[in-house]
Length: 122
Image (cartoon, one colour):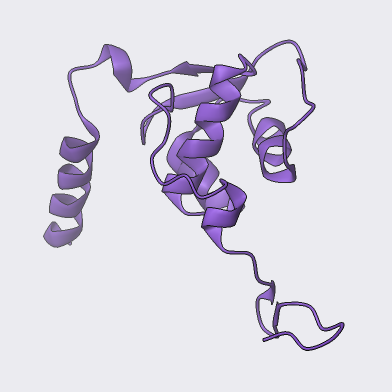
């Protein structure tokens, strides 16, 4: 796809970067990654930002107000798995605070099943 000085480009989508390149090949979020419907908020301190990529910084800026993980994936046009890995990185650095379904008796699978059932009912 490249020859000489050409860059990777999809004429309609712009520069192409595979999602796994953003998360350095990791396919599973860390154990500290928030769930699908958890609400994420940036911590009060800007913290130690050295080593964070532009995607991490973008997520931090979107988290200034409480936002659900699923909404972050939608707002950034990144796959949910990628967003969860990036948020796990931020949580390990204590740059975000997660509140949500951890207190409730529901799993992501049950939430997805409820969504599917609702869509089928339409």
